Image (cartoon, rainbow, N blue to C red):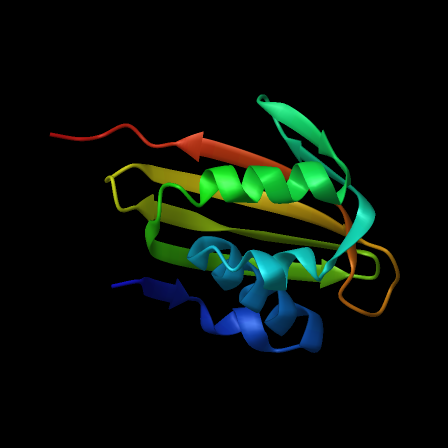
Length: 129
């Protein structure tokens, strides 16, 4: 079973609703939804790990990540302004690993849902006894 915990404040505008849906799609492994909202020349900087260039590399990374399913997604805050937005929260994988994240998005325009750049800051939480 997949659990979703989303702060009420994360849905009071069309772009916030879109980013909420995008994060849920990402966590559920809905690659078609995610890939339909990125530009062909997307740049995804997974800070401290790797930088992916273009839709092909982006989708390959999503496929790789979908090998470990998500058990719980929490979205704490979504902030939008013009071309830019960010979302932060956490994911707990079915293998028990927990990650806190902050994604910073750059859209291709001030309106719409096409993303051209993402910087992802991901921190794995230590397991407690």
